[in-house]
Image 1 (cartoon, rainbow, N blue to C red):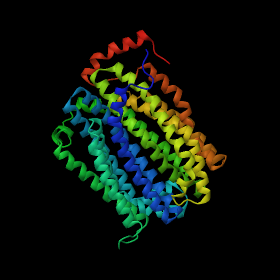
Image 2: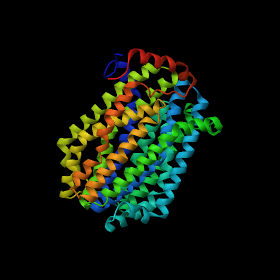
Image 3: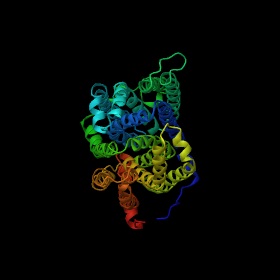
Image 4: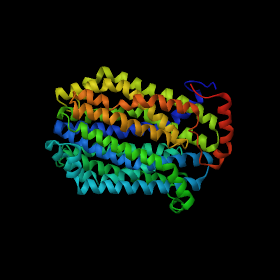
Length: 470
């Protein structure tokens, strides 16, 4: 079955129309993290390390709610392709309810048990004491930020990408201004340091939600205000939603737990290494920006085509995405490599931490390209209704390859920090071949809409007739 390897003009017009606003929104959000880290860097290397560890707890919460978010967007994208408005509302309502439940749980832990959380992640008291203060405040931010994520996910899935972009812009500038005032104590404001960064995050996310709602009041096509329809689920819909979402939720929870184990190992390495990886993850999120737009576009475009019953087009575009997206990640890394020392010096790291961070980016240039390929492929599987295969491969490779390799390197053999860091990516080398074989089989196309189900048998027969594989 011959298809254009890197896509047609129409393919890129669609990708850029959806992907650029998503990428810009993510860039703005990640710019906040970069500015935060630079400003927190004025408080010293230990402050950078502490806030970086707190961010890992936030990432664990992300793993807890993102499964429900991803499950919801499967249904929203396919119902959007089928023009089923009530299906969109129901999907958003159940997605939002599950996400908010997770955010309140993690928020309560951060506010009422910060010492316990920091004790899990690191045995360095100098780092832990700073993180405790930060967590007590940032816990209030979790429900607000997750609410904004849920609204943004709905809007992007129905191709209303400009509203979340504008709201993110306002939120980011609010955060930067408040950081400047509260961390550094400018214009007569108290110099709060690390707690000031947490307060700025809470306030800016409140502004984010307010702006989203103001725009949605004037745009009736967003479905946000159709509250009654959002909670008319029915037993059959609940069963269908959780059947599709169950493996995605399990994937995110077990993946997040696996990352927690890896972070515990990293948190017991040298302080310079902990600070270096905190800054590196900020830069990684910046690199990921250029990939996120394509990833978001892939979910919307492939999911909508599957929902509308255009399975062959979905299959064709999926193969194009998995070539273009990793190439973009590689290109961004190659552009950053010559400037890596200047970049890492901005964050207040010492000489040893800068040396670590420079080598980490070099390792990531190759390993991160594989990671982006694996991520986009699993993202496509989910948008097309396949939630099991990618989950199984991801979790098995994480728990049977990466975690044992990292634990042996970091805890048993006590290898140098960079060797431990490299082991974090061990599973990417295992997954790449397995999931690409499955992608080319076309078996991941599993519609949930009536329109998609009507044409799926014809697509499967066509795949069998033409043969599948490389």
